[in-house]
Length: 412
Image 1 (cartoon, helix red, strand yellow):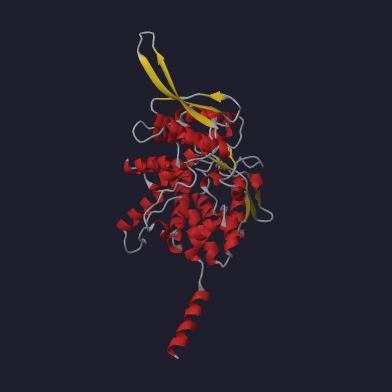
Image 2: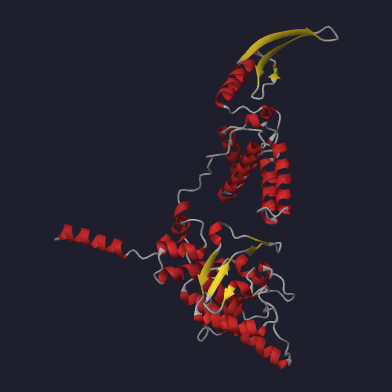
């Protein structure tokens, strides 16, 4: 299939040169004659090429194209997908660029200069180890390897390489990593925060009355903060899903919420995180009543209008909303308790916005919903995700009965 032969020649200056040539026909029937300085290198290459030609994994461009070139072409491909709206968001593209430029092509621990033919599971594993030694955390290293995997899948689609060297390469975290479970806010803490939101709504309403400001509220910042929090803590909607919600997605007659999209940090709408993210969640009668009141007050109440828009009727900026309206609630509760520790309850430990979603899921479990139903309402891609995060919250009465039965047999 492939042969090795020695070649001698003289340069124009009369100097003698020696090289070892591997002569073979590639998978396209084209003759290839790469040169090597030693017979050992040529033999090693011959063995590899014969093996690849035999099992169909040979790609002639694998010895020419570098990881850097693939990375640059992959980014261009993703930019085209974003322009064509082919399941590529600006946020996803930004993440890919960051992983490729800051890590995969990094001058010290990256692998941009490597040819595709030089990529093996071992070399990818070495790249992983160098990242970790450089201080990259376990979760981030996993995401970077996922980007590398996508990059090499693209290379396969271009017929530049046949095997994805990143496939199966894992980033091993601490032994206790898998044991970390979601701890949602308690009902008492959530009640305290929502009551604080209601008090803030009353304060703003009083200020408006004093100023004789009778303007109609038009945005999420003017909508009742209590409603915004109750919605998140009841429906379990992700932040991006809540801010992308339009009135046509709410069936206030049947009490159903249809989640079909989300909005990212750039204000661009797209599909939910996974196919399971498209879902229908029941809404309580109490929340339906509050939503009807808000719809009657808001001038943005047409079917295509956002339920919780900004003052211009566009998407609410999540980070800005959290900093200006949500997190200050904890500060006010802390100050109130400090000023009057007898009558004012202690402020709950601060939790982030996503804690509202965790709280919703914990309430569904506490209400006795089956794991598969919880997965559906939460929009998790699989039941495994639900159980990994919330499995410890499901009641285990059958397990306790089994232990009682065992103990009865031991101590009878």
